[in-house]
Structure formats: C-alpha cells, structure tokens
Amino acid sequence: MLPIAYTIRNIFRRPIQTLQLVGGSGMVVLLIMVAFAINQAMQETLTNSGSEQNIILLSAGSEESIERSEIALGTDEIVNANLQGIAQIMNQSAISPEVHYNGMVHTLQGQGAQALLRGVQHQALWVHPKVRIIEGRFPQSGEIMIGRLAHHKLGLKPIDLEVGEFLNFNSEKLKIVGIFDARGTVMEAEIWIPLLDLMTYTQRDNLSCVVLSVEDKNTFSNAEIFTRSRLDLELVAIRESIYYAEVSNFYSPIRWMAWISAILISIGAFMGGLNTLFATFTARIKEFGALQAIGFSRLAIFCSLSQEAAFTGFISATSSILIGILFMEGLSFPFAIGVFTLHFDQSIIFTGIISGVILGIVGVFPPSWKCLRPDLPETLRSY
Figure 1 (cartoon, helix red, strand yellow):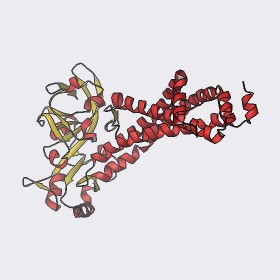
Figure 2 (cartoon, rainbow, N blue to C red; figure 1 turned 90 degrees about the horizontal axis):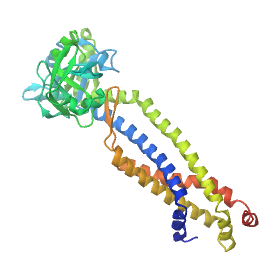
Figure 3 (cartoon, rainbow, N blue to C red; figure 1 turned 180 degrees about the vertical axis):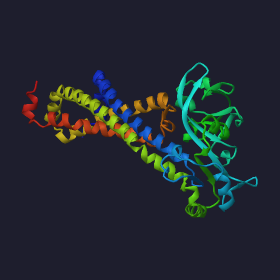
C-alpha cells in the first residue's frame, strides 16, 4: 500500500483542481443537507403541533381541514355537559371553542398578506400548553396576539409586529398586545384574536371546531360514542396528533419535491466534478505507470486514489456543515399552514459527512478505471 503521506501530499499538489472538487462536492453535500433539514423541519413542526391528550371535534366530512369545518355555536357547552373525562383546570373544563380563518390582513402602511387567524377564548391556553406568552398579555376585544414567527408568514419585518403596533382586518384596526411562541408548532405563525371578535368580523355564527384536553386515553372512545349518538350535531372526533399526522402526509409531495430538486442539481454538480477528476487523473497517468513500474499494484494505487477522494469529500462535507451552521441555521420558511425552521442537528451533520465521503469514493471509480485499466507499457507511452 502507498503511504498515507503520499495521499495527503497529492491533495495539495494541485490546489486549483482541489478547490474545484471541494466546491462541487460541497455544493452537492449542502443540497443534501438542506433537503434533509427541510423535510425534517416540516415534519417535526406538524408532529409537534398535535397532542396525544387533545381531541378535536369538527363537522363530519371536514376531517382533512379544520378551516372547512362548521359546527354549531354552543357545541362546547353540550360536550362539556355530556362527556366525562375532560381535564379540569381550576375546577373548569379544559375545552376550547375555536374558529380557524384564513384571510387578508394589512399593516397601517397598506402592506397586505394572507394570515392564519384563530379565534379563541382564554381556555385555549389550557388545551394548547405549548403556547407561552413571551411578551405582553392575552388579547381582549379589539386586540390580537401574534405568534413569534408570524412575520415570516406575512412577509413583514419583526419590527412591524411588535407590541403596540396595529393591523387592519376587514376594515377593523386591531392592536397587538401580546407575542407568543409555541415550541416549534404551526401556531407560532398564527394570529390569535378573541373568538367573538373574529366571528363578528367574518360574519359567521358557527365554530370551526372544539378542542378538548382529556385525562386518559379511554375518553377518546367516549367522545366517538358521543358524536355517533348525537347525529343532530353532525360531529366527528379525531385525535389532534392524528389530525396533524394526516396533514403531514398531505404535504409529503412537497417534501419529495425538495429531494428531487436537490438530486437534480446534485447530478449536475457531480458531473462537473467527474470532468475535473478525469482531467486531473489523465494528467497523472505517467505517475501511475511509474508507481506500477516500481512494484505497486493497480489495487494499491486505486486505494490511494480512494483515500484522496475520501479526504477531499470530508473537507467538502466539513465546509458545507460550517456554511449550513453559520448561515442557514435558524432560517424560517413559510408554508400553507405555518412556518418551519431549519436546524442542523447531529443527524443532519452526520448525513453530510457520510454523503461527502461516499460521494468522493464513488466519484473516483470512473476516472480510476480509465487511467488504471491500460497495460503498463501503454500507460508509460501515454506521454
């Protein structure tokens, strides 16, 4: 086998070609990491949004979209009076009537954007324990509370949605009195508004859903029995975790598009890297012949070239990881029902390192075959 010092020295003998290989491989690795991060962030955001302890009651036939659901006002009181096992907080039932509405909001300067509004009462904080008010207070009539990532969804700057600012919705001027986070859920991109205010502004007399928190898993069976026995209410019960799992499945084609885009761009970058490797190895055919002449086998030379490629791939992966952590960590991107944030955790970093090393080793096969396949006399006559 060739000494490792020879392998390392060859990496830096041709700095321009090495930089080209590192740049091309680094682009491929970064694309793979970003595609992985997008898929993971979107899936985790939707998964975190659902709680095993929560049950959603919505209209039959609207299981795939709360926004399409319409149930009678006062359903929460009927459910509270007839369903056992609802969690109790300060001797009150943890049950939240809600309206989910997708509409246009505008700043005072006239900038408009599509917003996700949730009409709630204070009980919403009991059934959504991940929600935490980090600034200001819960809204009263004529006021709203903003998720900390709502500015990404609205295409605004954070300063435009600070406490004390105003937004216009359906010709109503609403004051921002609070900002909340929800630990990586879709709610962080929402605008919360008092329930009756949203019903008044949108001229509706029904709810979208009722969300209730339960004490044990058996309550879900009771909720199903209740919805089937009260046909007049036209309700269906679904676990909140299952609802958001179904939403995640709905967005799986979008996640696959991220992978497909990354793969197509990576193929182009990979082909460019192969051209560079072919040119580099072709210029070293005489060197390979000399190594064979002094006793090194083709296998030993190939192993040395694979080590070079693996080292180059590792350098590329390290560079891509640094770029991802320094410039892309924490970036947030909006999608239809929320905002997801990229995090380059250990699994993504490990994927980047493995991708870089494998990419280098796989890429060395075609040029190595071309340069090491000829007989020794033919190799020595190459120059």
